[in-house]
Image (tube, rainbow, N blue to C red; front, side, top):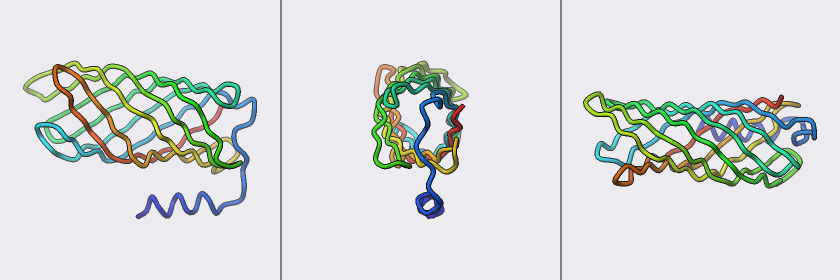
Length: 162
């Protein structure tokens, strides 16, 4: 519910335009709960930091480092991302794309390496001249290491344009 109020407040604040042409680099952080749809169904906490580049006000590439923590499991991810920005309004952008990379699971009794795949459907709302609120209402994180494993949930964060 608090996330809904935060998004509503972001839409109702004074208007800030989308990123300017000189705002091509961004650093950000996102966090949120994840539900593990694996052998041990449980709730995990997820924190991701990212660095990205945008060009032609449309194309996007970036690097993500993520830590997911739960009862008896630690997952670290190193991902590259690519996507396209769609402009919903002067203040709201939508990023569609993919993150692909490596994940390392530490179950304390076993360590597993896996390929990681994540579709991106991210909403960015301009809060201030160089600050965006970023919301991924549904983030599905898929891992392949002999068998598929999935975590899913929502994420909220911020990005600062440099």
